[in-house]
Length: 313
Image (cartoon, rainbow, N blue to C red; front, side):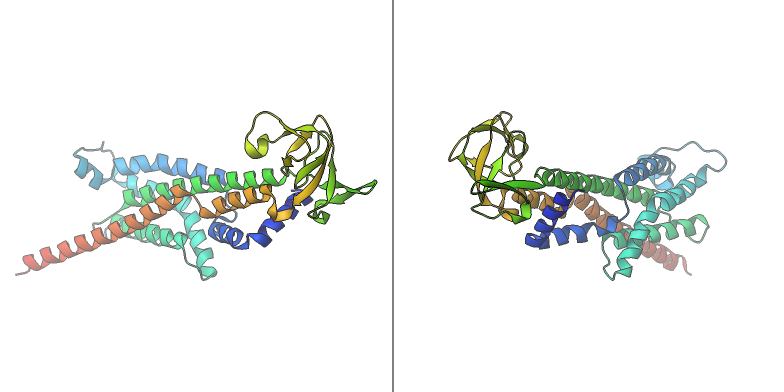
């Protein structure tokens, strides 16, 4: 990232600090993670979840079918469920560890608690401690959460790419007109009221009004207008647009965070901070899934105690 990108990111941080801070805080749980990692983990976990669900005794009972039986087939949910837990679930456990280390438990902690309890319960059931196992629920939950976090990471990556692309629209320097002299200065030294020379093929350094010259200006990257727009004295120009066909002398009317381009960058940063809608749905589904498992466990436990009381002479 060049000096200009850093400069404009700093501008956004100064004038939209709460937005950026919230964005960083909401995505710290993904430090060191990548879109490709979550994608690969999801697809493999999803593929392994299918046989886990298919050979699950509960699912067979509910849907009224019998899965093929062969030596060791009853251990398919346990073996594949353990693989899914170790391969797909450990990323959430590491995230929970980081949250707890920062004394800020969040969704990673909730997910880790759910999958750890489900894994321990299912493993104990497989070893014969009791009869309740939730291998298919464990596998499905991990696959769903990996999908949600994959989509979230992809959205974050796209937002960051858009932010960097917007920052790259501005030039590093501007040609400021001082009387009969033209000085090349960094953008940080421009002020409202300065007059700058914008040559053909270069970008407008800040929002302003044309005071001399005529040219076509490509505004497609800002407004979406596909055709160049003719500009003459009195016309407004936007920072980041490209001048073609002639030189313009522009009086600066807005600099830094006051430009339209910086406003767009703040909107992109706010969109990044808002997070993925799909991820929010997945998080709520995870919470509901955990509550359902807890209620089901209490119900089965209560039923077992009632039966034991009834059978006691």
